[in-house]
Figure 1 (spheres, rainbow, N blue to C red):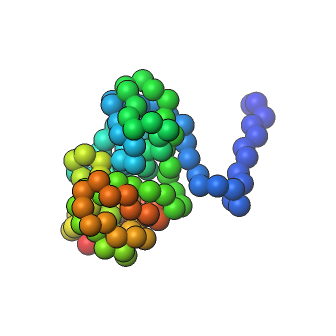
Figure 2 (tube, rainbow, N blue to C red):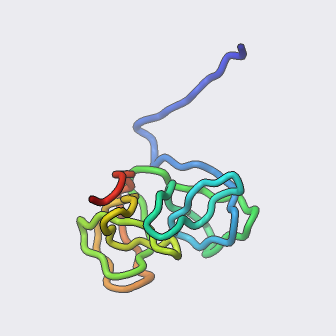
Figure 3 (cartoon, rainbow, N blue to C red):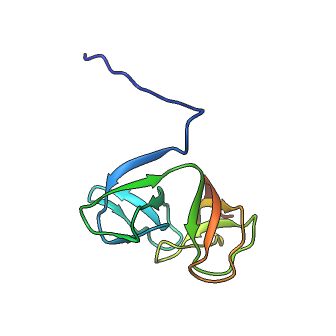
Length: 129
């Protein structure tokens, strides 16, 4: 068996992974990793993380960076209050989680309208009861 070296730096920056976009994606949207690359999750369903992009959009096949935990920024799909548990909507934007939806993050700042950027703590808290 080959020797393997794993590096983990718990004091470093925010944990991210590099993946391939499975469809056209905008910055600061939630994605789900699939065998075909990172794609928008179904509304309220499980998501892997939030896209970090240097540009506003990425095309299918582009390399992208996805933040999978710690603090990040997520584009709002509706009005949100600080402290709300958040789930993805059909566009990958954050919305207040309702019963049965997967909680990807908690809002650290509010949003007053769709498109506002919300500071979030990515917590993967399971499903809203």
